[in-house]
Length: 173
Image 1 (tube, one colour):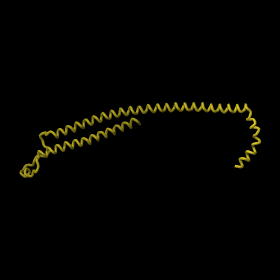
Image 2 (cartoon, rainbow, N blue to C red):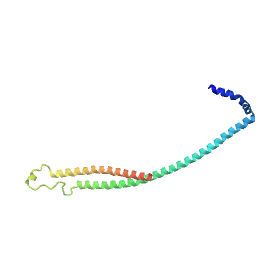
Image 3 (spheres, one colour):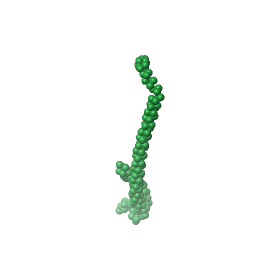
Image 4 (cartoon, rainbow, N blue to C red):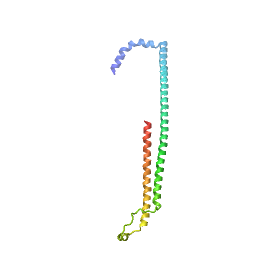
């Protein structure tokens, strides 16, 4: 640190006439004017750059907003198409299940059980009521058809969601 003082002490007497020139009011006024001018020029340039940046950001924001609105519009169209297809599929499934349950619940004159065996041994070994067993099998089969139909509805809904997502990803690429 002492070396700094020694350098300042060595050159300071030579700088004294220059410091005296700075005390001239005209030089101080010119230097102050140059400083103020440089500051105002910097403000002007900075302001112009800021306005240009704001315009670029506004243009980019407007373009992004437009792209987002397009994506939303396409998404709604895709959702409507997927929902319509899903409704058609569910309606067809409900019709098939209802027809099966109706067919099973209304006795069409036939039996779900095979015909009884011919011979004396087949008739004597029966330990249940064939009509009651046939009715119970029909109720069970109708219930099973309804349960399988619920699972099939879930599969249809999942397939619709997959179609919607695949179409959405295709459009947004």
